[in-house]
Length: 543
Image (tube, rainbow, N blue to C red; front, side, top):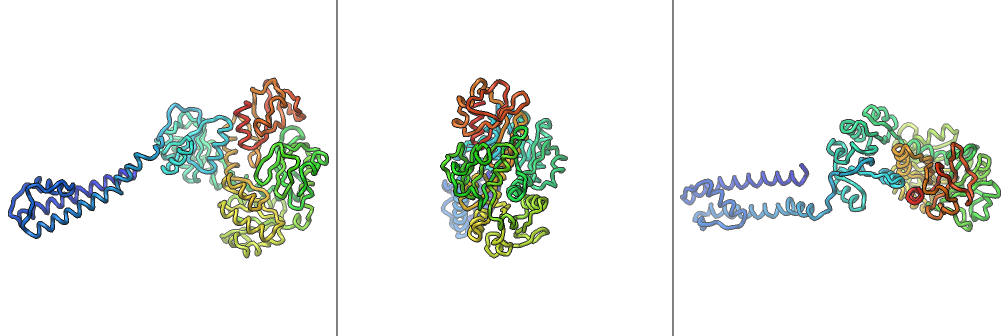
């Protein structure tokens, strides 16, 4: 029973009770004060006529003041109940009739992904599924949010994902997989319900606290993902690789051939040079696939584009070539290379960052609002006094691991004002916040929603290979039968999709020396790099 139905029942009970009470008073009043003996049915009829304003019939007028007062009170009560019924019953009913009707079930759908329920991470997953032309259904318990999603074009039903009826309405029995990503406890409940409804359907659960993985597996989840530690480790690696000798997060393409994202550090010799002037090819021998400029990915980038602080280069090459490029991107200002790192926020992401920095022997200071073990400075990171107490003026880097994007944006502005040369690396919840963070002054930004979406897609699309989970760019290994027999130049992959073919897996051998004349053969697997939107276009137009 929904809210409107409950109110209707309560109102009906109240109305009948009040009318019955007035009928008793009217029945005895007419006998005592007017000297008329009426049937109770007649008295009840008079009350109904009064409440509905249809008249009083032959009973009017009344001689006694007591009966006139009673009728006046009945009149006022009837009017009050009528006006009460408008906002309580009529208006909600009219709004429900005129508003968008969200489906409560789906029909004729199979091999889809059931997503419980809609979050920023679910939005990223839907984008990933769209890249592979995989259908989905969102099970959303909040009606208003379900209406908004439905009007925005999402395939959504209004149902409770913790109930068997809700999952059955989403067609979970014929689904490709079910994803539970609400909260640790709710997800466990969803997993238990899914086991009851369709125990053979693969279930993927996302946990905030990695220590709770065993409980989700015990509930019946086939895959339990914890993206926060992965995100924290990736953010921390952007600091450790600026002072260490290794390259950190590289994506293996073939033997001694890799693809890597390299942020250009503040104070690097490349800053304020154009790509043409940088001599990346001449000095390091790498191939530049694309670059992120303030959150905008360009491929191929304009040679006259100026490299700035925070530019992220996406390159391919061999180990020695990438190591040479890393030296070019590092800061030449030794004070900051040797300075400490400030970690703001000590949740699951912040804890993972601190562990990674500790393993690398990097000095760091933790700032958090809560005074807990591991926190060095207690305070608000949007207040200059807190940052100064943490040593912002001598810090090489600040890693923001806050759960709120608005707070992260403001903290970035404060840090950039206090210490213009300090490198800012940030985590955001939503992918749409990335560009605002770059405008605020961040040097490298990674979205939890993007990482989670890719992790989920990688688990669900087991016949496809998502090679990059914790990078700003997506790298996939996929078959493209539509390109068989065509050359890379003739197919114009980059121009049509914004993606770059960085390697071809042919009979177990990865070919990386690819030019415009390279011809794709049947059975080849292509290794493609690009944005999420770019890989979606590739799968639509080239597969």
